[in-house]
Image (tube, rainbow, N blue to C red; front, top):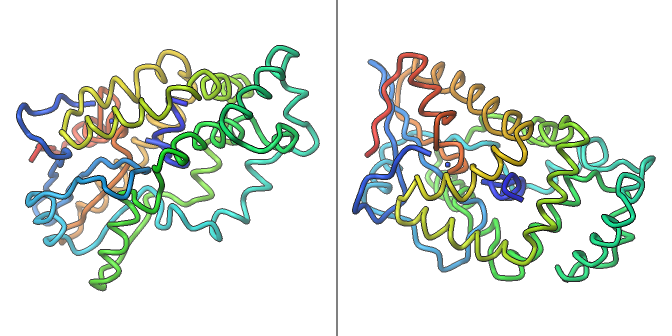
Length: 288
């Protein structure tokens, strides 16, 4: 589950927060010819969540385009062609990958999460089963992608005729999960079952820290368990992607103009953050 929250879906950042700044964190990266704003997001929010501020609105008004992890993160039509390839394993039912105790636990967890019968999980890869389990309680509590930052920013940009780009594709994002080791996938499922009772509370804690600009707290909530319990997943889904995104952004900064880059807040935190990767490329990142 720590892993899943940062994808939102496919869910959710570490440099110390500046004191007394009650708004989400925003960073600025400049080259001689271009400017990039970095903004950490929460993919699932309630409709009444507040996060806009004059500082953020100025950065958005100044920006000529928007960059997200993927261009259309909630486009089910874009995801559908890859579900069979990356999320299903019909030839090897989920129950065959679990012990008797794990199968019994899965049945209890599915019922507790208010999901249909456990038989429907049989064709799923463990990572997809984990995602579904982790998302069910938070969606029931009113959190959803339609209120998430990416959805709001995308609508804003499209309404003003400004382009939206993706740092990676939906296929690439799903492939990150599908290429995890079997052990890492099963650990994700185990974590999702562990947290089915307290996932809503943890997500609300993340949202509260994010709204307050407390990046250190966000990092502890999102990253520390993942580093300890799922190191392979942490490398594949956080470090490797941060490195790849930083390459894209460094290339963008060789051009001109201003871009607003919004990625899951966990990617903008800690010793492996996007900011750290950009600094290793000789770029200066400043908290606004």
